[in-house]
Image (cartoon, rainbow, N blue to C red):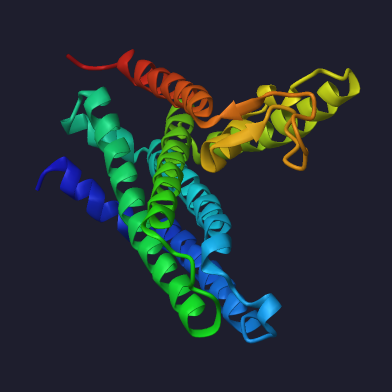
Length: 268
């Protein structure tokens, strides 16, 4: 059996993968049930697929992004921590090849799960709209727009999976990736935002990764970081190509660092 096939089987047998995926599925089911329930109310509260489906793509992207980050980090972090990785390298000494195979396994698995859940999510919400909501106004252009939004969401999910994997590989422990994410969330987002607001830095959103994630999904985002702005709000917009460049650079940096870290002890 090839290393890739063996890793793929092991990935889906892990309890972290199954429990995390189960939690995501239960949350999505609960959201769909709530939407269907409230669609029974007067027409003003009915689910309108044309206008309300895109925000729900973002919900799926957020849940699957969290899923990808956690399982990607735990997949390689646990193996470094328990010594399983060292045992594997005893008969496959080329560390970079092994690391990239594991990364490919994680990305492929998360992609497959995302596509399946994305299809089921779309079908479920479309069924709610047809039975209890409003399915009018759906044109070919609307479906294409949703498809492009979904494609960007998938790319963001895979990026988060890769970042979680690489951070855990760098620290050789799942907790390193989770800790880094916590630091970015608390210090890099909340702390920096408060500091920039205090010194009144213009376009403060350009210094926050969350602004680029929002711009990538929604196609544009105010550089002030405030989506409630009306007009130009004295700030420029972060476009999705700019966001893609920044987020892609982050993924590339952590990937190169992870490869360099294992290559130092590569056996040739």
